[in-house]
Figure 1: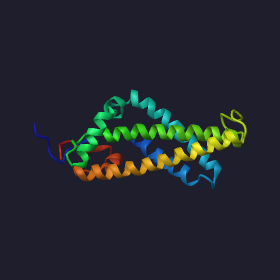
Figure 2: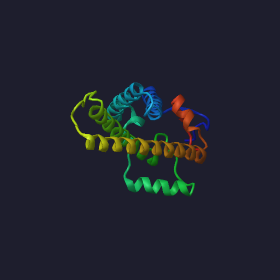
Figure 3: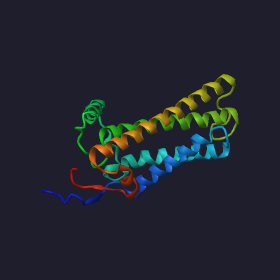
Figure 4: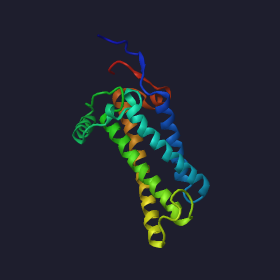
Length: 191
C-alpha cells in the first residue's frame, strides 16, 4: 500500500511538545543564570525537576510515541543504528529512532543528576529548599558544587549532540524534525 508522499500524521502530542520546549527553555534559563540571578536559577531548576517527574510518568502512561517502550532500545540496537546512520543507510522511524531514544534517556539522567545536586547544593550553602541543612560543611558543599557543574555541563554537551543528531537525521531523511516538534506531525510515507 503506497501512502500519499506528502501526507502527514500526528506523532508528538501536545504534552510531549509542551514538555520538550518548556524543558529546553528552563534549562537554558538555569544554565545562563548560574552565577547571576539565583532566584531565577533555582526556580528554573525546580521546574526542570517537576518536568522530569512528569515525563517519566508520561513515558509509561502516554500515547504510543511518548512511551519508553516505543523508543528505548538496547545498546546493540543503538550502535547498529548509529553505524548505519554514519553510512547514510539508517532506516527512518516515525517516532524516536534508537539514537534519539538513547539521547532522551541520557538527557533525563543527566538532568536528574543536575537537579538533585543543585537542590542538595542549595540546601548545603543557602540552607534553603527541601534539603536545607542535610549536608553540612565545606567539603560537602564543594563536592555538591562540582557535581552540579559537571552534570550541567554534561547536559549542555548532550544538548549540542542532540541538536546535531536532529540536524543530521533531518538531512538524511529529508524531513524537518524541528518543525515536527512544533507541529507534532511527520510525513507518513518513507522518504
